[in-house]
Image (cartoon, rainbow, N blue to C red):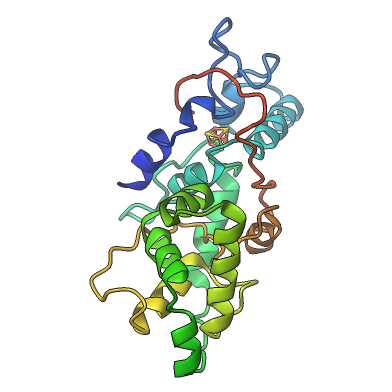
Length: 243
Ligand code: SF4
């Protein structure tokens, strides 16, 4: 499943924050006073006055912060295309403006390569190879969304997140800064995952290897992003078309 499908096939996609209001299809179901244009408004002259546009974007990003498909949307919105740009070069995706996403892309390209970590001890690798942890690693290779990782691993989100953070510790990685892809790479190098395992990419915005359930660690990895806290049990807006 590619990132676009991971977003549009997400079980909560119909309840995304930028779905159209069923009675006013040009408006957001999450806030009928907010037009859907708030997610797509370009920065060219001739549209809304800048102040109003900025206020609308702020409101849209706040809605993204409560969106049940935030992680999947952000992963898709930060995918780079072969020419060097973003697959979605304009608009707000996953709570990030086009400027945020372009800056993140540039930052990743210019980032210094990480220094090599010391190899974890055989005892720690054995601890990382329990049935539950291997289930989490296999699920993490296939999913980027925290809920889907937990679902595939057959446990609740809090337990899955704990295993993810504990895997970082056991494999000698910093759970505060290690990305999901880095954790999976180290797991693969230590044969906790098969050599031919397919790892779904993070997208161009790194996903925390060991997230916290309240989203605090994701915020540290992506400091200018809105809170990724999601609340599938919150009152849900009605379905609408993609942003
Ligand atoms: S842009 Fe993405 S994260 Fe924001 S409300 Fe729409 S689907 Fe949700």
